Length: 242
Image (tube, rainbow, N blue to C red):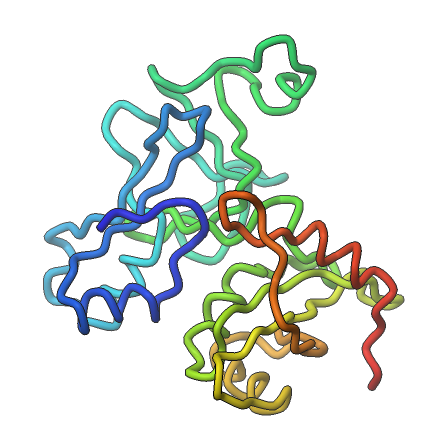
């Protein structure tokens, strides 16, 4: 199975590979990339890694395919391959679009032969691209970036959680803070404290959501992606009661 679109939670990958014995590969691309940019295939360099370490690699967007060139850049230039430093992913190559037809968005998206994807990513030491967020969904807290996608995917590995979407809410001191919107699995129960405790140890303390809101459903686009713009609008006046 090759999966694209939103990032694949590790729990989903593990279920297909372990329970159903279906090989699972994550791919990344856009309409503008016609369509493929990368695939999370294993290399011989990770043959002796543990299954959990391999699962971390499988959940990335993968290695850049031949003939394409990718870079992750921020205000300091091309980021190091340390798996931690975030920046915007840009792509160039023979099948990458070079402009939008009669659309002013071309000025921001296409520069010096590069397509700026609008996706925030890191690069692992092995060269695997890992999308951490969209530029519009990234949470900027106290001058640091927090990945809503990483928080969502980890929450969705909890046995009681069916879906989770994390959005930014305004904060007087820190500019923005994460708020998690969670749909529970039918017949399951979990508290805010339980879910935040589940995240502790996996993320820095300042990454943890300030609050968790339990909802019946998360709004989605026509192709099933979380519609975070609608969530942000619905919760624009939400303030954490601490």
